[in-house]
Length: 328
Image (cartoon, one colour):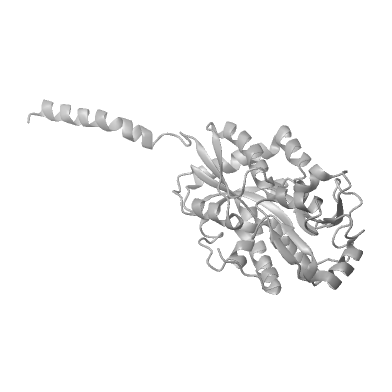
């Protein structure tokens, strides 16, 4: 083969391989992204995820498609993302249950929240409100008296084993000192519906879950697990005011990528999340839903790592005290 022919072969080979190389080097993201919400559609995690990801998609330049993968307290969907390719095209909307309490609750958990994920950042949090049938008690003091006398007869409605309403009520009942009958539901909406109808006695609900029912007179709001009273329930005492300083719980929501995602891709998501949380329209929608947005110093991967590490230790102690262990 002469020199001219050899050069022609080299040029032809370069032309043939160019499309594949170009595709490999295409700037991220070059196709739609999947956001796994590990709970049923319509819940607070789902609603928050859709509001925030809609704005993030505009920043990233690609649609973010929400996919609900419910089950086992959110650990099924979280496991799926932990095992997915670290290419930035799959992330999960986790929370205190999936990425903190799960370590203690599920002995056979198939992922390590601190190892198998790349944190993007905290999105929001909401306090827990203990609610009861209106005819059961007129306040926390009378409820506590009833619970200690009739504990095994009372029914606790929660949004499913391992859910925030479940684990926060494990904490509440252990602090008060009684063991009710647990009635799990497939989501917080169904649990609240039966509570209002009188088919269950009490629940530990996210503030966002009870907002639709405020003012209808069907529920008794006993206490809220927040440092200060919340504007939506100005007459409801905090747990500390009500004499339960150890009942400290909130549901925080955060976005995670699988481990191994390049820092440059993680930073694209972190910047997009920060931009969403700074948007006035997004902030208003989240705050109207009863969510508290993180301060600037609470945003980003490092603050989320610290928060998660603290919560893992804390919930290990809570679950151990409550003597609760779940099968996954």
